[in-house]
Length: 484
Image (cartoon, rainbow, N blue to C red):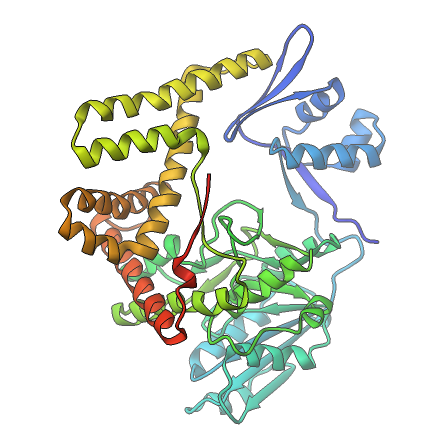
């Protein structure tokens, strides 16, 4: 069985503290304190620059098999960064690239042109374009493209069916999907394919960037689009920060695609989410890698932007009808319930004194955290501990307020107009996630423009979701699961 080979490097702001009877690795972000034995500490100290397990084994005179297990453990504990080596030890696999298209003659030409510039062995590639009964000259354009296969469907069937049609004739070990309004970067496959050397990984997705930053909407989408999955490599799981991978940039083993039965053509949108969730249920890992970039042409007109967001909102009804266990989860840490209760009471009853009491809760929590770390033997400054606690509160507010605004915002505004204290809470729910995203991702936009687009997206999402709920006679997307 082929083994995925990595290069390793110590994560930024990781230090090793040595006491009389213990060695502790301290990470500043995320804040962690982990006890190590002398061998693990020696390995961690030796990873200041990128090195492979083989290089470290030779340098430290250690058994490479045992060292690889130790390095994987340190990476899992977020003390080491890692990236796969290329090419894979067993050579590059064959890849079938599948692109559905409808009424986009210029875009599909640009897309295929970018695919022809891929830095990947040409003998290992095939390109399949599936036209979905275009009503303009796209069919003629597709037939003349320099590609492996062109499929022209006589009747419109939707992107899921087109992707299945392409996969049905594909011969590659890996099926690579992108969209006709995308252009791939030259290293797209080289960055993502090596991860398939890990046999537990069934799907890999890469980063989706905005094709240009010419308009305010494109600049907004570059950091706030639902296709934006962040800058950290993570496993993709339902009800996490990365719940799905978009077909704009998705690679899957052909054998897994066959086992899952491909995309569900009954989905007008969200078929990529459904496929990823079914892959997760089959115990195959789904991995997001913030490399292997694809540049996506977002809808830059305001009306089209709002319609697309409403379309996305409606997809949740289809998804939750097929996956009833994947309800939206509102998670509130138990230790922060006193803070929330005090804050809500202070706002509703306009008690300024209770706000001061609520503000003291993070200070108390920081004190307890500091005490636990000191007992553990870690020496960490008070300011770092307090910043970490505040960051945890920030994540909690972003999660709770973001979900309340996205799913219940319009209803909360209506109630707020009848009850002024509720209006203040509603405005807080809209404002907090807006500021969180703006300050964290630093979009090339002014705050008022960003906020206007962010709130328009929230409203459009709810309108699309409510409309689809009425059509399907279900309230499933509106019923969350509360976990404390």
